Amino acid sequence: MDNKLEKIRHSASHVLAQAVLEFFPDAKLAIGPAIEDGFYYDFDLGSKTFSEDDLGKIEAKMHEIIKQDQKIEHYLRDADASIKYIKSKKQPYKSEMAQDLKAQGEKELSFYKMVNKDGKAKFVDLCAGPHVESTKEIGAVKLLRVAGAYWRGDEKNKMLQRIYGTAFTKQSELDDYLKMLEEAKKRDHRKLGQELDLFHIDEVVGLGLPLWHPKGALLWRIIEDFWYHEHLKVGYNLVRTPHIGNKTLWETSGHWGFYNESMYPPIEASQSLKESQGKEKVKDPETYLLKPMNCPFHLRIYKNRLHSYREFPLRWAECGTVYRFEKKGELSGLTRVRGFTQDDAHIICRADQVEDELGRVIDFILFIYQSFGFKIEDINVYLSVRDPENNKYAGSEEGWKFTEGVLEKVAKQKGLSFQKDIGGAVFYGPKLDFKIKDAIGREWQCSTLQFDFNLPSRFDIKFTNNEGQDEQPYMLHRALFGSFERFIGLLIEHYGGAFPTWLAPVQVQIVTVKDECVEFAKGLANEFSLHGIRVAVDDSNETVGKKIREAESMRVPYMLVIGEKEMASNDLQVRIRGQKEVEQFSKEKFIERLKREIMARN
Image 1 (cartoon, one colour):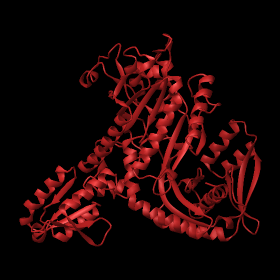
Image 2 (image 1 turned 90 degrees about the vertical axis):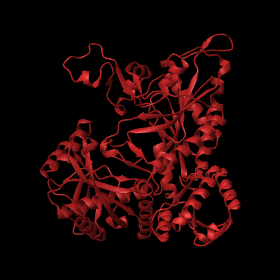
Image 3 (image 1 turned 180 degrees about the vertical axis):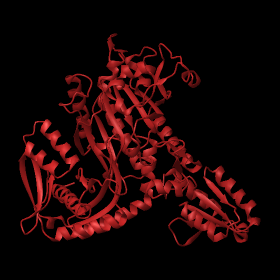
Image 4 (image 1 turned 60 degrees about the vertical axis):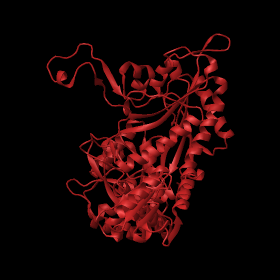
């Protein structure tokens, strides 16, 4: 977001707060920042709630305020006087923020006021800015929705009401954005997941834990089979590890101390559920944790025997399900879940192999994106390094400088256009993050490539070098999809559910005109299946028109309607997705076409 747009949107959030106070003068104000695609403001209305009618009235009032050309003026005020002033306005959230700023050593606090042409202040807010100079500069605004938000993001605090909106320099830009939002609603993977019968999330099973239906599970298997095939082709070996690990494992890896905010509480595995409900407690309980990552297990596989420098590089891959703590309010479809399958791999190599292996992984990541129809220009790359002012990182200064330097060097050699993300590194090393833009331009973390010098040391892994001495190898962590769940969610939205032929769970839908055609249709389906083509037969008692509409709604690439005429001919009348005209193919030519598309991943 450019600086001008940030100022416009931040200023729009103040206009929103002023408008809300016009209708709800007792509203308590929290925060109102600019965000990537707009702005929001959090309010406490006590027992009241915003309605859709309220949003309409508030937006109309915002337009009125913008037309008034109110000046937005900045001033500083002594911290104690500021706190006294805010308390007089009965704004507890602002008061808490002001007192926190004073405790952090601020002598003066920053305010912005909106002043009408008569010189009277219409709205005053504790705020660091930035803002435009006048409301007239805001341009076009639109309120979008109301959502719940805990004060300061803490579930222990009160739930506030958050109004989201967006703003642009001119109306045409806003109109384009709203059109994009409408298109995004149609592509929303949560909506399409239900409509296409792919998956759902069941509260009885648990939030953030998707259930995959037959078509969704088949889509997953198609993607996973491709993943395995490509990995074996380029020199990876497969490993498998359990879902839980002893507490000692996570203490050794450092996750127990550095990653505990994303981990679930320990499981006591030394007694059964029935035994744990009794009065007696185990004196020395055997404690396990759900795994948030696969890497410690792979290192324990490595330590199972001695290794020579001649074996390297070792490339070990696993589609392993991991579990990470997510707050209930932050869960979202497949893109933010609590249990997900990571397409993980760890490369253990010598120092002289590191640059080549990093380069190979970058090439593999880009190949994967292109294979699934993503354009390289729609992928943003971030070089995530440590924040030297933060102590959340393990390892030595020397190790961090070396690994960050090598990763940046290889990224440049590969021609990657990247931004530096200071503080974005994981606790054991720097990384390259590859983020895909979704249908409305939001970025989602998918592929990651991490250069680790810490875990090999923590697990004391060694190999015998060419001089017969013990040496510590390096370790690369990488995931191509990131997680199957998120990647499939993005694929659903990317294609709007209309998957290319090679990915479609059903590639050909056969529709029968009447019962006499069913046996022929099933024989045709069997013939297609022998050629590796995924086919379904709709022989229900519904009308032909309804069957056709159903196949179209399921976005099947090809549809065949089988009646007496088709049974008497070797030619097939083929309905192609997105095409109005029906095309005629011989059975052999149609099968050849499908096989070519599947082979070419079209």
